[in-house]
Length: 79
Image (spheres, rainbow, N blue to C red):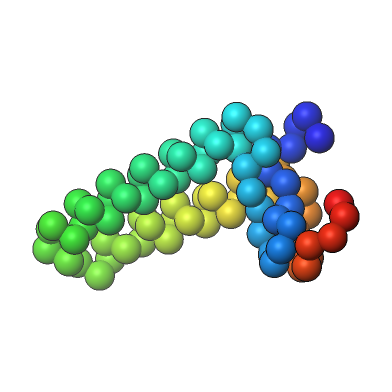
């Protein structure tokens, strides 16, 4: 598990940060997403301005996929 930055969620599908690297990626994503969205809302509202947010989100999903457990639907229980 040392090389996995994200573990599969206990409920539902997806990931949660498991190491400092995973937390760093998550915090970077939240800060960058919020900064870009704030800039975009206060700007001209060009619809293409949303493309960087889509790219940022796709990048986060790619990092989670490469550096995390394989996600699967879970409903709690033992790991």
